[in-house]
Image 1 (cartoon, rainbow, N blue to C red):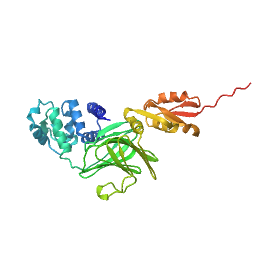
Image 2 (tube, rainbow, N blue to C red; image 1 turned 120 degrees about the horizontal axis):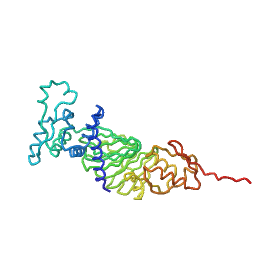
Image 3 (tube, rainbow, N blue to C red; image 1 turned 30 degrees about the horizontal axis):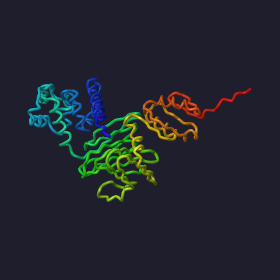
Image 4 (cartoon, rainbow, N blue to C red; image 1 turned 135 degrees about the horizontal axis):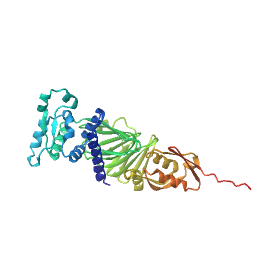
Length: 362
């Protein structure tokens, strides 16, 4: 399963958002820092943004953040003369606060002509990802009902489902990710010298180059392999190679899934289970004889209107079907057509109770 076209669409959408934000004159200091972080997250972000704008005018206020000077960037760009095109903008060396304090006469000395988008992309990407110290820590998160994707510093890609959060620590020797909450699918860049570790609840997962989904639930963590192979452990003190961890609980190939609880591990070799778990990437939820309570909980991940099953027998009743994750209304209509269920619509809440037959008196 290749998600690259979807990833490109998402990055382009993010670049468009920043393009509009820069032209709205409402970019706060906090949002400006977010923009810097977004650029640093991946060369693909720089590439898409500059391709969109056609030149580097929105990087003026950021030039002071780069570890290389504008002169260095330009010299690197001139090393590829066949790519140089007419310039359309300037890069200012000072950040916005410093520039405001400079005398007017001194400001021209801080201006350097920029070059076309393709060369600027190469130079800035080199500055951000070649000269930057190779030790990175960061957090990625999504709000309720939000899904997003990022290219991580090592070239791997992470897709986060609704209400999810990860923390990463990358350096020359290790790649480690903590799934703090929610669900993430990782497309891991191959690097045999630096295995890719993910911790989530009681589970620890190791991969070199593969594609797998990790869903951290309250009582267990579900690991689903789409491509390649991963090794799965129970609780570990450390994931560093030098820690010599014990033998893994299991090794999973493509189409296999493991559910790791605090005291138990269960492995499924049904490819259907994997497809069901990663259906969220197509904005779908799939149920196969699942308890109604679990189905309601899945829809509650994507909707502002929550579904509450107010009866224990109904909670355990089984549901099967494929639904759009963001079409809660379709699922509610499905419930309304069940003869044993009564659906009551309230403000931002749906209550499902047993359907009590009306007794007619004579």
